[in-house]
Image (tube, rainbow, N blue to C red; front, side, top):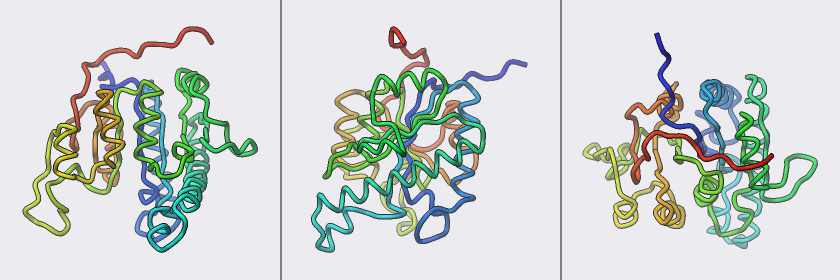
Length: 253
């Protein structure tokens, strides 16, 4: 019996910092991050190349601090450092499950992570390493959603997989409105016009301009990362998924 081929060959997985908290109100739940790492390793074992952008909301939220009176740029830089803590924790969890990883940071910190270098990141992916991008874009006023869109395009990913706490995009908050309807597919303009909370408008616009699809799915259901990679119909697709194919390789070493 032949094993089914993955639907995607290279993905960018967007994880929020809050996804690492589990049922807690702060920090990193070891069982949760270990479970995520195990699922990512299952995907890597299929030959899928995985890049990850991780947020820092479980430790510090720059937007919230700015709303409370802190200088926005300072608050955003603190949020970027929070993403680095999460990236190192995820790297440790992945390596405990046998996945080779590299952390690349948009803010230089030589003792902890590689600086972000696009060609080096591409080579890591081609060699089967999981690349975790930390510190967002390295610039204040830009969210990790925008960083995910930017890195996905730079890495020539076939899709952004945004892992959330709900099973797709709804017309309203399903926890507050029992009549909320889950969308199976949306256009980028639908998301912008209806102000749906998928990603911020800058990230959506970047994806729209570059025809990069987004798959929003529920991370809390075990095995959903693998289901998404295999092409099962889960969550909500924003844009249009490309036909199954191979990734163009960069020339040289």
